[in-house]
Length: 308
Picture 1: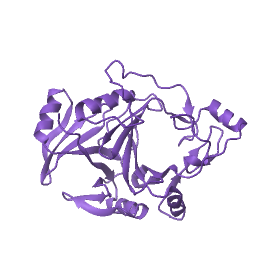
Picture 2: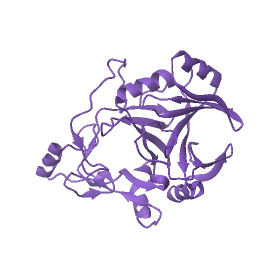
Picture 3: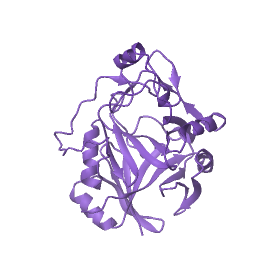
Picture 4: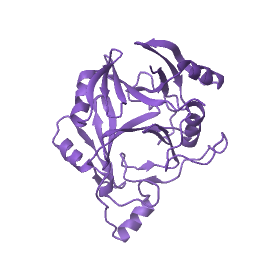
C-alpha cells in the first residue's frame, strides 16, 4: 500500500499575489514569502504552502465549489483577534449566535456545545437561556476575510502557529471520506471521521434536519453528518452543502485546487487509473518536477506532485 501523501499546497487564483502574500505574512507571523518552481508562494511552519496564480479578473466565488475555506492553528486566538481589530487589512467575520441576530467573533463567547456537535439547535439555545448557561470563554474558532474573497479560520489556543485544515462541502461527507481513504490512502480524522468500516451503501447518510449556531450565516448551519481524513498534520474535513445547488468544479475559482506530495508518482498514476479515478490533466511537467491533476468526489481538483 502506497504511503499517505503529504499535504503540499493550496493553489489560489489572485488579482494581486504579492498583496495577498503580504496579507498572510502580517496576519500570521510564522509565515514567509517564497517561490516554488517559479510560482509566487507563502510558506507555513509545517511546510504547507499557498501558491498564487495571477489573474486579471477577480476569481469567481460562485457557483460554490467543494472547497470552502482553510484554517490556521494560533497560539492565542484572543490576542490574534485584538491584533486583527486594529488592522485595516483584516475584515472580521461575525459568528451569529441565533437567527434573530446577535453575534460574537469567537465561538467560545456564546453558549457551550452539547456533545460532539459544534453549536446549538434552536431548542438547545432555548434550554441554555432557561438554565442561564454562560460562555466558556478561552480558546475557540474565529474567521476573517482575506484577499480575493478567501475565508480564513483561525483557531486557538495551540502550542504553535501552523496551517491546520481545509474545510470542504460534499453531499455525502462519509462517502467523501471513503473516497479519500480508498484512493489517497488517507486515515480517518480522530473525532471527525467515521472510524467504522465504510462501504458505498453505509456512507450514504442524510443531512441532519437541524441548523445550529454560532454560524457565519444568520440562518444557522447544518453540521451533521461531518467527516474528515488526515494528511500528516493537516485535516481535510467535510460538511454537507447548506443549499441544494450542485457543487461546481474548482478550477478557475479562488481556491483552484489542493495539492499533495508523493514519492513515486508513476506508482500513484497506475493505482488511480486502475481504480477508475478521473484524470483532469497529466502527467505534466511542473517546474523541475512532474504532476497529475485528478478530480475528487465533489468535483474538486486535486494535484499529486512528485517530490524529490
